[in-house]
Image (cartoon, rainbow, N blue to C red):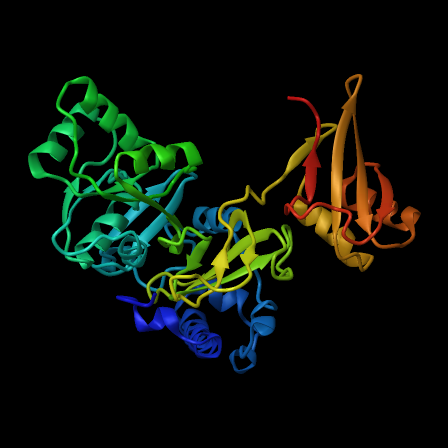
Length: 405
């Protein structure tokens, strides 16, 4: 099942790793040279040592909160951009606010790979319902569809009746947007007695694709596949017709790390998605997306050989407030690291209006010493309980807030 695949999608594991690590080294050198942020944060690291993923894991993680703070201190791009704003093709401002640049024209966000897997091709009329307003999503999918030779209708968001009218007028064959919006358009068209019947394929993101919603589309003869990306990094992974996980894009390096740390987890364990992007205008090295996922074993039945993700499995930022104090995953991770604990979970509960917390640790150790470190890190007292290895669920949670809302 390798028909019409990019040869890079069927590379051996070793070929891909060599190419990714070479791209990492080049990006490291250029970022250190041309980016004020990386000149500081990468100083003291040796590029010649970046010959493995283990070496990559020694570099600092860039979290979204760090990015926002850097941009606030040094607008607009926090010193991460390698070009001045007036040299960029476009600049955007996403909620946060977070500034995002487009360094060059074309499919710089690489979403064409996801659209191609969903069947988009020359001759299609693609109706793009991602927003073109302030944020880059609309332009991301516009550029991707154009790269594949599709004609694009820039529908954006809202205006349901006009969207349906445009679909009928142009005989739209493909849709890109959030999973639920096309259903709203099609139902509105049905109500008017002028249904839209030409759409046969769609690539969706920016929200959950529930099984019953996918089934609804398929009952209408529409193939519905998911893409996964962010405004910061572009495409991260995409679904294929096999519908077995999400294939990592060929032009990003993805790690799964324990939330609150930069430490990679074993294959199959749920952790935070961390992405390295080799964009020369806006390199992002070990950018923490805040999303949870896990690596699937094996390869895709379509013949694509890259790593697969299980999909979106929640958020890694599990910060909560206990007795009026914020407790962060990073604090819990530091407790675990100090005492050599591989896996821990802080459970927060409430009884009669009083918060309490217990740190559950796999393995064995000195509960009193761990409790003392927990109090030192969080300024809150908590109990410590040890359990057998493997007893904690594989769901990526570091802080489990069990209090009723």
